Picture 1 (cartoon, one colour):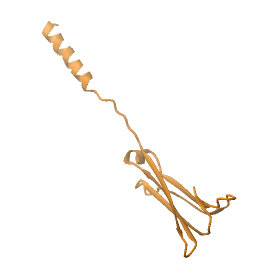
Picture 2 (cartoon, helix red, strand yellow; picture 1 turned 135 degrees about the horizontal axis):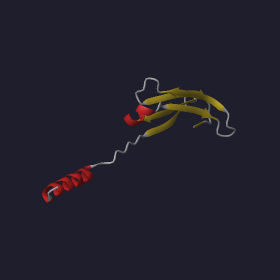
Picture 3 (tube, helix red, strand yellow; picture 1 turned 180 degrees about the vertical axis):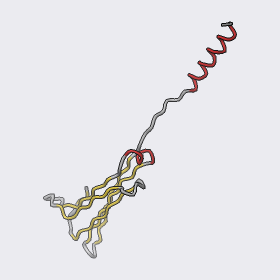
Length: 105
């Protein structure tokens, strides 16, 4: 191999190595919950949501559980669970109870 040919080959290989990028895929799952109290009706409404980004939707099925329970003794008043069966990346549950002291978990 001539010196100019071997230099060209090594330069090409070095250029390819410098431009290679590592493929890293990251998936994100977000969760949130909220609770609302209506004092005129004593109605407590809990919401729980799980959201998956596009990368996570390819590999995972979102699920969410929401529970309203008594703060003092842990008695569960109301609960709901759901899965993201339509695969749109978002699944939400709503649960309600008439009470005065509740917690969402």
